Length: 265
Ligand SMILES: [Zn+2]
Image (cartoon, rainbow, N blue to C red; front, side, top):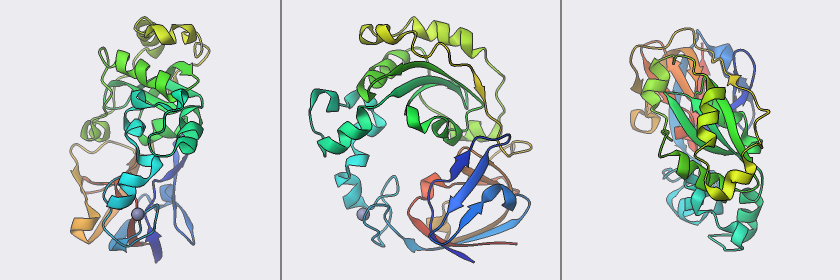
């Protein structure tokens, strides 16, 4: 029996991708659990910031931490609101400078369909794996989060910026010529970013392979907080989802801060 709060699964870019669950006392290679029956029991909560046993509000944080933590500011989900490059504080300027003033990548990914996204360069390829992307290509590399954000806003006119998780889990998308698509995307760059147009041209298309033999025809999502417990045979992993034999799926990232006891047989 393994006990502790769920965290986003760690990953390693192999063929297929390797997934790990980290608990206070143990590190579990989730790929090894494929084919096994897994039981999860909800035992409480542990906010990822303060550790309090109160319901998780969003992103693994209790309600008060979510509204106070510098890592949960609006600029996280909306990079174009970043202002550290202007020395303007949102919640904690030194934290915001550390996170925002570093190389960011604007990319195209094929997850549920073709989409545009932004990530810190250090989060490549983690971000792509977490989205369940089959193919990805960087469009530009820029020196801060604001420039990445305004690029994404300009590209959102032409590309989706969302992943439809149901579609991502139930379909294997047709390959897309991302080199050609990047050419098109580069023509939409905002003026402030045009100087960076050649910053990622040496980057090639990356293809990702998930440990999932065949996608389920439909999916029903498991909410462990509501269900209190769940048992199912693991058949695969994609994005941050565990996929079970009866088309049940569980978003591990969506359960960050939820304490469980886990057993596998
Ligand atoms: Zn908290």
